[in-house]
Amino acid sequence: MFDSHNLIIAATKVSHWDDSVDSLTVRWDGETITIPTDGEAEWRSAGEERQVVVERTDDANAVRVTVAGLVDMDVRVRPIGKHENKVHNYQLPDNDAFAHLETQFRFKNLTDLVEGVLGKTYRPGYVSPVKIGVPMPVMGGEDKYQTPSLLSPLCRLCRFHGGSAGNGMATI
Image (cartoon, rainbow, N blue to C red; front, side):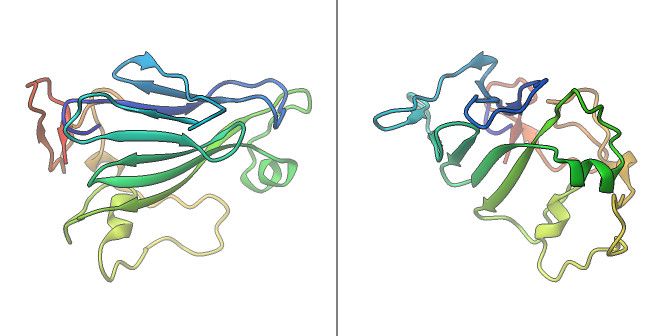
């Protein structure tokens, strides 16, 4: 969420993993967008003050998202392998597959007071309270970040303001 927009990047449900099948879904303000696989292999928002570019970094399952002045993200859909299934105790059946997003963020112009479940990790001098070596660490404090819906910026520690359209979207 930023300005008055929603950008959703998701892994589609898969029953059998195939590297050549694109299992990545991208939506801009509720509309599914298609990222070309040839030529420029990118999609650009039109007429926006803060331009958004989604470009393929592989034939399938990988994109780089740039939100001008805000963030660069590399996103890849990856299958949960047998090792991860065992380590994290997902208990996936042998005849099914599960995909997840592997993400890398490079934020622009963050304040020293950045907040959020993962946001705090970008603070200068941040030291994690999580015990290293635990297969699935939980940091706690989820009550600070509970929201009425997935796309709501409203929470106890909210530092966002309503977007220019007055629709409650986050302005960063």
